Every structure is written in structure tokens, then in C-alpha cells.
Length: 143
Image 1 (cartoon, rainbow, N blue to C red):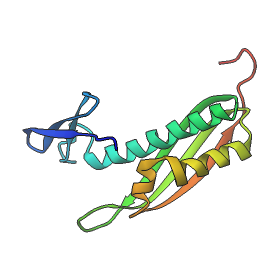
Image 2 (image 1 turned 180 degrees about the vertical axis):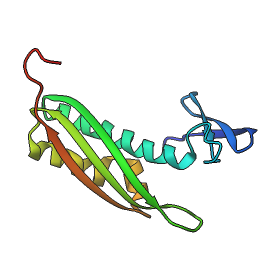
Image 3 (image 1 turned 60 degrees about the vertical axis):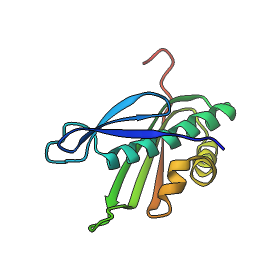
Image 4 (image 1 turned 90 degrees about the horizontal axis):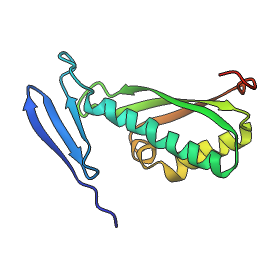
């Protein structure tokens, strides 16, 4: 079983220097009024986008789909009282290239139901819905 570690060191106010197993550091600010850095819950939502996007790219490459671009956007609602967990999350997957809709839909389902650890954890408290938008491939020579 793999072990991951994380640490938050108080800087001032409600700001913390966080580090994890990888050694990378991120400043987080829990005070949404001072808003000097991302908040912890914002980072959870960003982690969801990155986790499922990673799955989508990996799966579509394995399916030999001509992916040109991918953007995953999230919009979320939180519980009004503590703990203010996410209760509803809407994900939009915007995919560019001549990617087949069925391949994209299959990749999305695999990410949601099997591979994306963040999605599976958040699904314990939040209803997660998804929209898939396939953009037309870029014209030859155009960028």
C-alpha cells in the first residue's frame, strides 16, 4: 500500500505553507476575505479537474483518439453549515480533435467509476454530473 504524506505549516492569519510527498509547496489561504492564495476547498475542486482530466487523456490516447485539447471545468455547491462539504458538482469536459463521441463517453465513465480517486471520494458527499462537449477539429494548418 502506497503512503502519501502532507504537511501544513502556519505562516500567518489563515495562511499555510503546504507540502506533500512530492516535495512541492503550495500556499493556501483559508480566509476568503484576504484571499491571498487558493483556499483548501478550491484546491480539492481543482484536484478533481486534474484527476479526471489525466484519466481522459490517458484513456483517449490508449484508444488512439486524435485529441487536440481538453479542458475540464467544475462548478460546485457547498453545504450551508459546517462541515461545508461539496454537495453538488457539475463537470464540463471540452474536448477538441476528431475524437469519437463513444470513445469520449467511455473514457468519462471509466474515469468517474474506476480511476479518478478524487471523484470517487467526492461522490460520497456530492452529486456529480457531467457534460461532454466535443469541439470540431482544428483545420489543417490552422492553430
